[in-house]
Image 1 (cartoon, rainbow, N blue to C red):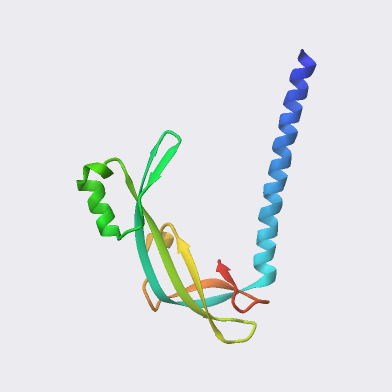
Image 2 (cartoon, one colour):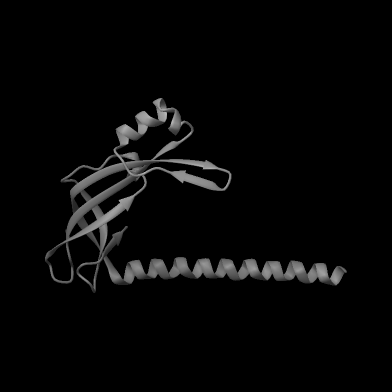
Length: 143
């Protein structure tokens, strides 16, 4: 009886250890990939679009609405009985242009976010940092 409990605990601990090593390895590879294959670059925002949807979780069930304007979503959550108990979630799409270190030409990219970075709205024409691929001129990623 005691041996089976000890083996169960050892197997559980070993499984958690393997999981932790796997997550650590993935994080280390991601950091290596960022540094080895991407260079910091300035990007200029060309388009910003904020849309929202309404979401409600009851137990394990999540109900969502279609994507619509944020003002309409906020109004519906406050004033319409059908949407009572729902929360408004954002879907922010930012399109940008950057100069690729591969061919020194302008390329475009797109990033979708669920919240504004640092709680500050982004506007057309603003500059922000990205990482541009050193191999593929059309590839970029966030810092």
